[in-house]
Length: 144
Image (cartoon, rainbow, N blue to C red; front, side, top):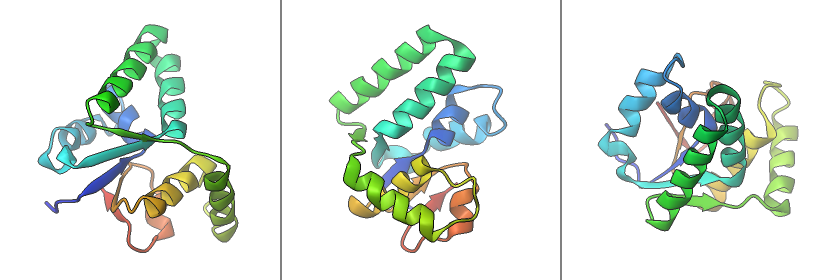
């Protein structure tokens, strides 16, 4: 396995890891426990919004609150960095969406992930979202 210095974790990876019935749960569990994810880990406020919304819908409010507290605790312990998504990031993400009109399932959150990876020089994106593979973004390694 390749060792990566920094990894941005997309919502699809978190959701697959947490939801035991998800089709990628076993792969996500394996990757989350691998030495590969002992790197500098990053997520964004948009990713938190997506995973909390999904977990709340599937597992309920208590699970969503517990997850949110765990993410904040991980950040406090320096195991995870939560990046803010501001207007400048959104503007750049909109330009990226315009550059890649297809696939139309490529979302604004997906675009902010790429912009944040570029801005903070994050070398790897951990996602089960196939849209990222279709885009072939230079200098961005995709897991799995």
